[in-house]
Length: 399
Image 1 (tube, rainbow, N blue to C red):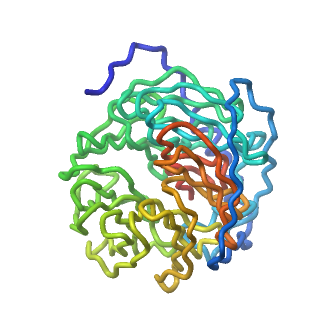
Image 2 (image 1 turned 90 degrees about the vertical axis):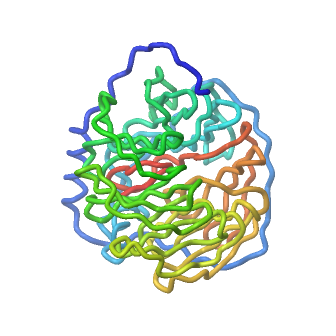
Image 3 (image 1 turned 135 degrees about the vertical axis):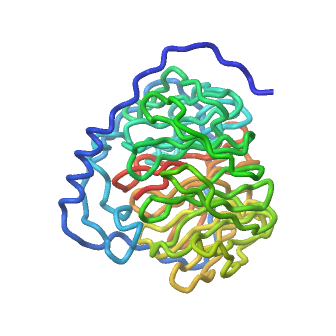
């Protein structure tokens, strides 16, 4: 049974006005290309580190934002390349926030030193750390605690929990007007006001285990994967109604749209690969085998590749968006799960779900650079900040 939480004073959530100003500033810039990542197999080298947690406030290493204009070749990822950090994150220290699901804690890692610099308790069963749409707050999704723990990314410190029912995952509509709480055990999407968290409406997706989703380029529809029933479901964002569904079988999990917006890539843990789904016809066009336990998906900074973590076999497959084929496979061992790409695109950070560690992988060679000890059951870690005008949610879906 979910644990009950006490009534708390809810800290006001920062308004969207400052973020809107930041968006206008980004839009005013002219075009240039983002960074690039090559992806070739290599023999891995591992540096293991065990880090003692500290409860002191981490030293601030301010982020400097140097906005590169849009990369027209990257499609929907045109504003998520190297050098495209939003003015909203200026002065924010770069940190990696790791929710330890089995320990009900968060570890904070300094990626410059690869050490844990802070550690604190949160609600029961924290699954993901999610950046807000305006990039001003991080939210720990305490699923069984029925709460969100807000974190100030400037200080790295948590605030008072916000009562929210069953937040397994959290997303934001592309215009920033609504938050979408993925209430997995109730098989629904709860649309909420992102400032007051008042419930605006709910969508029963009709299948067990909704957990990860992504949006169409125009933001009018979303596609959500239902892990425990094998379905993916299309939802109209404005009307908050189901408009289509497709049975891909087994355990569909992470969902990412292609750069050109024409298809979705759906990692399927039970089928050991990735479905390529046409969101208009609601048809599986292709299946790409990647490895046992295909789980998380992360686009490269130049928008040409998709990194897929194969949790069941300790590997990462690299899919080329243009050819829809695997062009590299890296063996790092352990249980790579959820995470994100560093702002410079040179590293992929992933939690080791069943090993109590975080992996740092070189995105050029595939080498395992660091293994950092954290708490029990690390899950949806957030590398923050990352490039992008705004956050769509999860551990860092940016546009």
